[in-house]
Length: 185
Figure 1 (cartoon, helix red, strand yellow):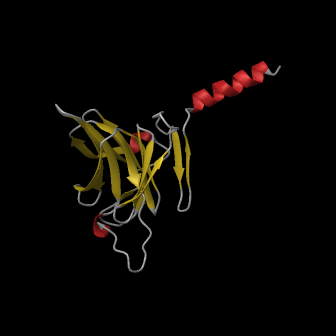
Figure 2: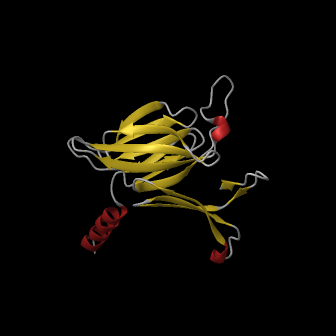
Figure 3: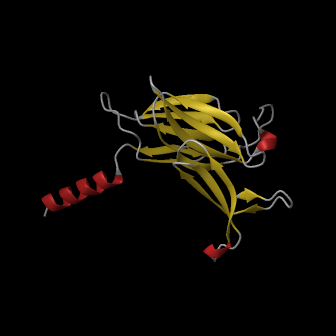
């Protein structure tokens, strides 16, 4: 949802990441693609993933970072240097149209999702990093892989209480199911 500066109403939008940056398109009429309007076009480093970041749940006594600059979108970028690869999850404000916060990772980012309480980042090394939606602080790190195997999580889902993830690709699971069904006939 893209907030309108005049009336505060949230409108549907399309987020597009590419080799040249990212774009945000407002969908004025959900029934017709002819009513899609280019709102933001930002040229920069390649964007691997782009997603809307859920508004955090407000809690008494806890400070929410960038409260007046939300909503935010999360953008995964990867920059190669002479010595190593740098991997970032950057948070960009739809209100101010500027970056507000950056999470840095040694390993490439495979995917990320958010809920009103958490931001969950899956790394290609098989680790999952759980951060607070309020202040971006790292809360927990989970190794989703078997010892000696570094497979990224193929699927994640998150709500305010549970994180669900799958270590295998759905195609592999389906293939194993088909093989086991074929062998039992």
